Amino acid sequence: MHRLLLIDDDEALAAPLAHYLARFDFELVAVTRPSAALARLAVERFDALILDGMLPEMDGFAFCKQLRGGQDAWREIPILMLTARGDLTDRVVGLELGADDYLAKPFEPRELAARLQTILRRARLAPAAATPTTLLRFEGLDIDTARRQVSCASGPVELTSTEYELLLMLAKEPGKVFSRDEILNRLRGQEADLFTRAVDILVSRMRRKLEPLEALKTLRNAGYCFALPSRGEDAS
Image 1 (cartoon, helix red, strand yellow):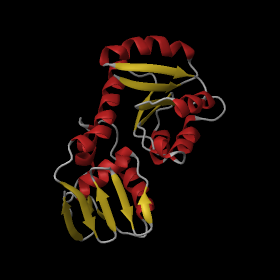
Image 2: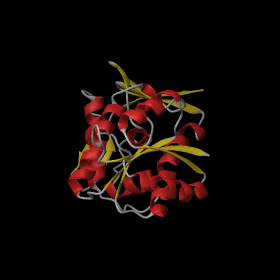
Image 3: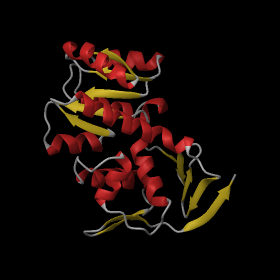
Image 4: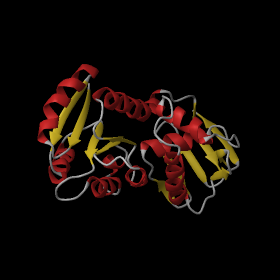
């Protein structure tokens, strides 16, 4: 069973949502304030967060940013943001701050369950599917697929689970051009029903984290590819 932490000040949402998600093997714990969420995160393990955009104390976007810059255990926990405002700007901001997915209110509970299943599957597949080759080496960059760790000359590179999966997807086939729709399909495990701008946001975030390396190349009207030359691979 996967444990979820819902941070939403709508107290009426928690009970029916917990009842519905239980059929998908989710246990939902609900709090109404970011401070209460931090208190639970400090002592309990959660597999993913469902984070409302409008909250007391601070909004969900600021809280998402705080989590991504906080303890190591919080940096990679999948975050699905909910908000009553479904415009493109909100979606862009949420993804830029490190959210893994985004769903506008009002939402269908079945879609929420499907999106949660997708980001959780994405977070756990890489360790489970580790191949005999666990270290991908490139000029200035190493990717340890067994430990899901990325490092460069300046030290470890902190990536969210979605950023890591995108980097690994591109790095496994250096030079191959992936379109935005293809990237969305591969990462989400479903049709690209959100918006291709999400890929641009992810790549922009990753480029900032990988600076000064120029690992990701943009091909106008085509997509993205991994551009670092290989230094060979270590087999375990």
